[in-house]
Image 1 (cartoon, rainbow, N blue to C red):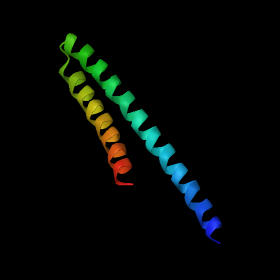
Image 2 (image 1 turned 120 degrees about the horizontal axis):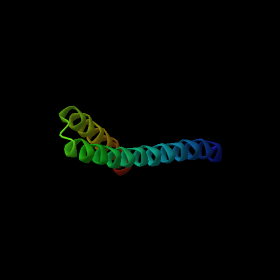
Image 3 (image 1 turned 45 degrees about the horizontal axis):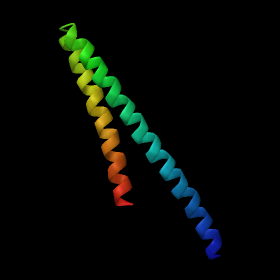
Image 4 (image 1 turned 60 degrees about the vertical axis):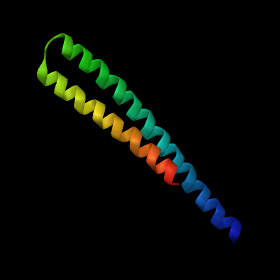
Length: 74
């Protein structure tokens, strides 16, 4: 019975690690994309574009931060 329970927790642990890796990778891409969007909007003096880019950077940072926090807690 102990081996059966271990196989269930192994599957859940594998799924958790995949989701955390995917979340941090998407967050990193959003950080880079937001940085590029911000630079382009800054160059064109587009305030609305700058605000949207900052939101993208913050969202990417939150994803990366949450992934790191959950990884550290487990």
